[in-house]
Image 1: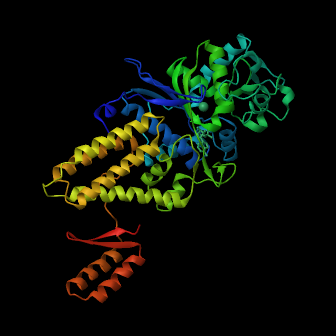
Image 2 (image 1 turned 45 degrees about the vertical axis):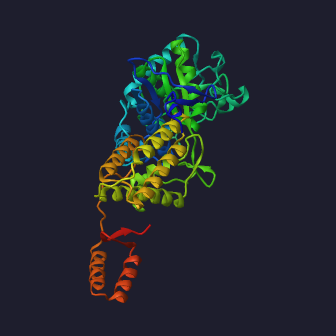
Image 3 (image 1 turned 120 degrees about the vertical axis):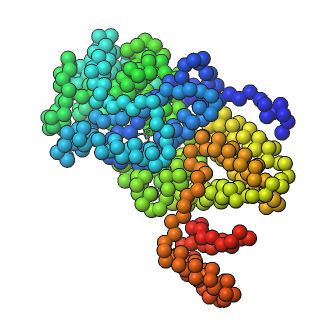
Length: 482
Ligand code: AMP
Ligand code: ZN
């Protein structure tokens, strides 16, 4: 690779759902990028499908910083909707009592997956007053009306560019717009089947005692207005990036555009990004299909947050990710390769070298960044990273890396990890059961006494318990069986 090739313009290009093009992200001098990411509905534990989207959003945040952008990111918590209300009523709790433990569990999950904290996590119930103001303004401007069931609806026929994000035809739009937010089974409540709810009128049988007072009667906000309101209140009328899973494109994000722009008269979002689904046997992982795993399910099966994060982020965000335990095992093994590499580098004590490290590292850094600049092509970035490990391992085989160079490689790995967030760079103490330790000691003794039959026998017993023994010039050590 020539020097000029390596020094080429380093811009970040990201695919935009609305224009269907990769667009160059332009930094705004002195201003952070304003990012809104649709957060979880805190009525239960999130599943690893939801977490795929949240891990990608974290990856993007890290990539943006890697490219020199500063960011102001908001992730909302939907703590009022049909599901949270139903859960609270069923468990005889207030809405806050019901949602609080799931909110806490969500933050624990993010921590397990080493997801960076964003600048704000607003809760929908803290913004009801502002939502009411927004709905009133939409009523005043003629974009909204009160339906026969006394709920307030958005009139999609008034918003001329409705459908521009999802690229759907009017008939398809009419069918889907009210999905998840049907006020009743009776479509006659609305002027048009595609109109969606802004304020859901109170129904004692359905809502128990959960309601807010408003100029248009008791009730609660619709899901879509929650995000429009929190996004514009915290980040302003125009935001730079808005993200969510692909299921959010329609109707949720289409409706967010309509409400926000009808209210402010300003362009709402400059750039839309959507994460493809995590699927199981070709079907979207979802609570309703019952084909889901929570993070806790996987941790209890012996996988670490690192393993799961690696699995979730290693394929491109615009491709569906098929979840299998084989895939998760493979992710675990890939990280073990990195761990072995790190251990090897840490064990180098000699000062001879082949003077090739600089070349390997700069090529890997260049290819890693180039891949990320192309719509966060993480699969290619990972390939550059693992190629580098392979090349440096080969150098190590021939004593071509000195202790000082090994230190430089370890520092470079830390830089990669600012983006990846899951490399095993710190030594993790292997917790070996006492019984295995004892077998290992006996085997060492047998070897010292040249009783190789007994030593082999003990090695097999250790293997049965899930551990292998690695013998090298530096001695023998126990490792987990791959
Ligand atoms: P929800 O709590 O249903 O609003 O979902 C929270 C986030 O997870 C949204 O951005 C969804 O689009 C996303 N999501 C839901 N299911 C999946 C899935 N199977 N794969 C990836 N993302 C998902
Ligand atoms: Zn949202």
